[in-house]
Image 1 (cartoon, rainbow, N blue to C red):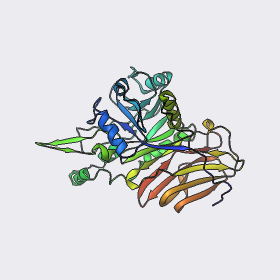
Image 2 (image 1 turned 120 degrees about the horizontal axis):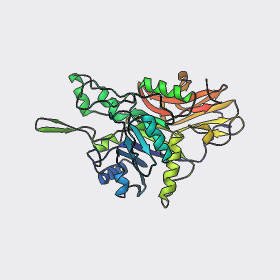
Image 3 (image 1 turned 90 degrees about the horizontal axis):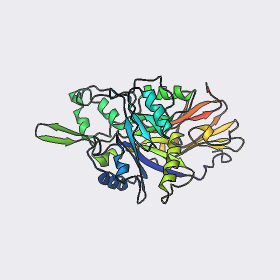
Image 4 (image 1 turned 60 degrees about the vertical axis):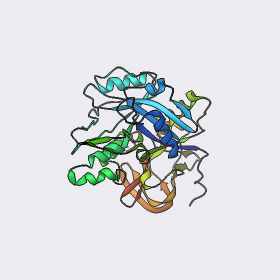
Length: 362
């Protein structure tokens, strides 16, 4: 290791679950049970996005519950119940539904940020649970994309009756994010920064067959799958929920963090960063939100909590692979860099990208 460039800045890392539904919309778990379970599995935050509802905030659940930060947003959609959008930071539910560009703009005008939800969702088997993909890719101004949706991933693999054994092992078959959406994400980030998050899409789904009812993804199982990690420059202040929300939203919007599949191991403590030859250190995410720009050459550092295969992705293509717990990769050229980490065939970590240089990046 080139220790001259490998020091990670003093930061606070939070790990949590996003895109959760409660009994205030179409979920089967209420807020008290959700909060209790999130504490049990040691999450630092949860983001609840009930459909077109901020009732969780209205009922006083937003804020801190002991050490757990509870953030209440909501999930928007168009008039055809497509083009779902995870909305965070608005005071009220926006009442615009006719076109995605209109509600993206209106949400931004109301000081909110948004992430395109389950963008390439499809279904093979369950007709009672239709797909809700994003189909208007001409929109502008959205803040990011839900790269890996846990519920969508599981449902899309139920292609015929032979797959029903997956009902009993819902997390085991979380292999990787869809290549199509990763490709599209890279293409967007070539010209403008778009953050990436992981989503659970928790509903505590129940399937009825005659007199029998089977609960798929009990909430404790759901919260131990796809997670989002954020790096913060300071801890969230428990005595100032408004400031805590602002710091948290800033980290999400600017992509300061990474996505993990907890089924492949607890990744908390992972460090992914770039150090430049002029002494500037950069975290994953939007470069212009991090202050001074760096000078090449630079070093991309990865420090894991467990051994795995580390892949360096540049401009959408794998350019370097190594195995172990640490990696230092020299960057000599501008471009879009990000990290993927695998355990066998299973994806464990996806970092947000590092835009190096000026747009367009390639």
